[in-house]
Image (tube, rainbow, N blue to C red):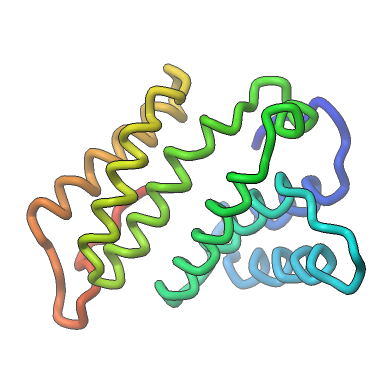
Length: 174
């Protein structure tokens, strides 16, 4: 889990959900994430904080069982990143830069398209992920994302599509 420089109750609640997801309690994580989402998207004139939206949608995608729902949340996370600023990201943690979000976000969108048998869309987002990998740090996280990009590219190149148009082997992109 990322150390927070400043307290943020929404991010702390998202982190609680992510802890459940990591331990295998996807349903528990989904409940927490949906509770937070309902609070963010509730009535009111306030536009939700893009950092909250990108983080929550990114993690909500990970706990979906339906690839179409996963894609819907992945696209929501990607759209939210477009309105996120480096200043806001750094308020959460001083090391964060929005450009560093895009490799993982595009990779997840590509993997979801691939799972749905949408190779052209998958390749488009995978190319975007690969292009934005230059913004990743040279650490374990950066190596993980770069490796996942390479694995998904190999899957797409092998055209490993199963009977229902879903990938036989989902990319290990998380």
